Length: 143
Image (tube, rainbow, N blue to C red; front, top):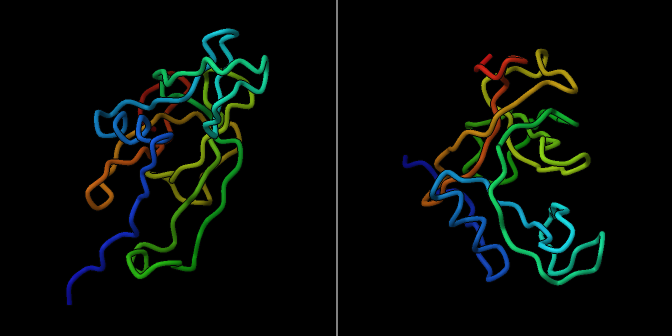
């Protein structure tokens, strides 16, 4: 029996930059060009200064675990043989409260700690490349 295809990733004009960046292994987040505030989830207007001059910019891919959960139920046939897996909210290093949700890899639920440093990696997901995060030491090397 063949492996089910992953659920489709829907690209729209407002998130296309993100998927193009991911294909190039670059994590892009919207940033206000007027005040410098990072904006995620993407919006056409800055929540800080209400400027509409927002553009995608690369971030370091470094952050810390803000929250996480272990998923035991497959919500799609593609994930049946992948459960359990970890989903985390990562606070990116560029700005306090700049949160990004992704998979957490290379660690078990028992070893995850709030505030644990992580670094972005790239994983293939069907015909797309997606960002995932892996724990690193405080010095930045893979844990």
